[in-house]
Length: 264
Image 1 (cartoon, rainbow, N blue to C red):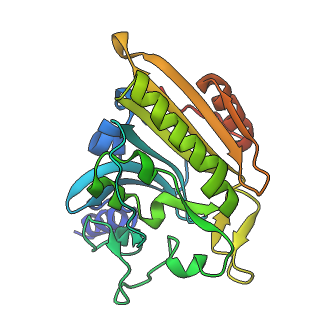
Image 2: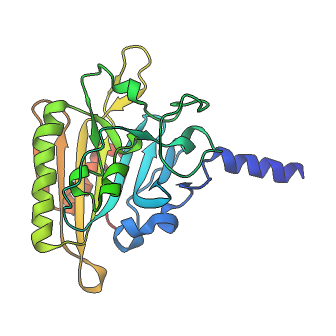
Image 3: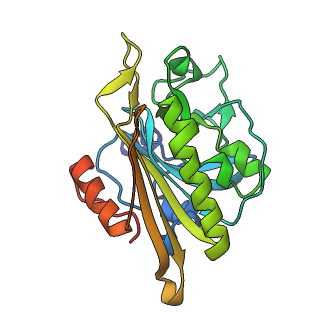
C-alpha cells in the first residue's frame, strides 16, 4: 500500500494529469507531421501540453517551466479565417496545481502556487517586451482556436518592433504562400533561450535570443512535398533568415547545443 501511494504521488508531481500529458504524440499527435513531435529534452523542467479550451484540443506546446517560456508550439494550418484578437491571456492551471482541470483558464487568485512553473501577466507589465505568440492568431483555424492562442504558455518575451514588424510580416507571408500551395500544412514555431530575464530582481521569465518556425506540407507517401524554415534574432534590428528545414535544424543544434529535429 505504501509503495502504491508513493508511485501515485510521483505520478501527480510529474504533471501526468489531464492535458499536461506524459506523451503528446499519443494525446494530441494530430498537430505533428506524421504524428511525430519535434525533439524533446531530458529533464523534469519540461512539460508536454495539449492546449485545451472548452474541452477541445487546438495545438500542442512543449513548455520549459524553469525559463517559463515554451520551447515550441505545433499546429496545423488550414487557411486564414480572419479571426479577432482576444487580448486577454490564459494560463495553464495544471502546471501549478495537479488537481486543476484540463482547460486553460484566466488567472484566478485562488490558485495555489500560481506562477511557480509558468509566466504570469504581471511578469510582462512595464517589461518593455510583448507577449509574443508562437502559435499565432493570424494562422488560427477558427475563432475558438484564435482565443486558445492567448495563453502565456504559448508566448515568450518578444521585442516590440520584431513582434509587430519583421516577425508578423513573416507570419503573414507564410500564411499567404501556404494558402496558394498547401492549405493543410504542419507548422512548428519555437524560441531559443537567451541570457537575460524579465525582472531586475526575480528574473523569472527568460528572454529568447531567437524565434524560429518550420513548415511541412505532406505529400506522396507522407513526405514533406514543400517545406522551409525561418529564424530571426529577438532584438530591435532583427535579422530574418529563410532556409531549408535541414539547415534550420543545423542552426538549432548549434544554438541548443544538442541534436534537434523539427520533422521526423
